[in-house]
Length: 398
Image (tube, rainbow, N blue to C red; front, side):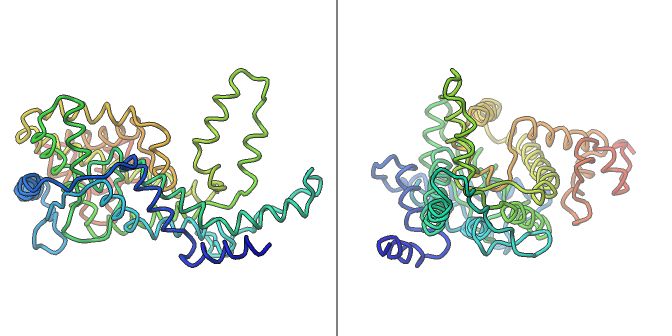
């Protein structure tokens, strides 16, 4: 059909993902279609001052250099629209890897061999095998648009709640700039009746602490490798949506809830199926993310408690907001393999607390020292095992 061929050519000019569609949908969701004002110049001036405070305090508390170049951190205040544009561009390689994983050119990340081709339609399909094959071909042609809409939806929903660039604790492109989203920060402060200045400082400390650890070269490399391997592990499942709906009993009173679960599952909507390759990556990725988040929370408690007047109240409000995050807002977490449940966060915090109890801050300082010092999944649950492996006396008194 010429129309579909022309449509496929138009969409395909942007590569494996329609980025125009991604940006339009992300902007629409993030702003709810309303125009945005520029960031207040006074807020820019205040955040410029706070960036120096946050950088100095994090460096003193951790021994890490937050600025990769050594020239100093710059906090860049942005609107939701600006945040969306930058975030789509920063994570573009990961979304394009997802597109390759779900396309015919996908490869198995474990072996490098070509991925298995999509399933052949069942000859007994009531639509007929030719019709089923035609439908799969049509979906393949429209995949760039589908993936663009999905990427835009994920990032747009994330923009409605993100304070900065590390709400997803994974690397951004290296540099000395750290984004903070002023409208989201100020709206959160008003919603929870918190001081705007306190919340802004809290966010600056939180973002700079993430920036410091995620720019340690071997941490950045390992996190990037694990996330990319997880994304590459998805396999095309073009019949997944139909199969998921077919498993719902229309006579079941809980059927409506089941339908809602199907429409809230990004893997089903994208025609993406998990694979054994992801099962191999997930424990290491879960462990690294949990340790990183636990470490950042510990640094925040050390530094923020003395700088932010209402630190306990802000921290509790952020925690409650995290727990209440909807599944729709966690689409992108699942696609990137991030398991940011409260139980995983608590496990990371318990690991860090256990290290400090046994070996003090000096022992914790070894966490990011060398690639071989990163904890294993077993060590995350038993800090003593980690300390023993890296040969640290677990008695902080000597």
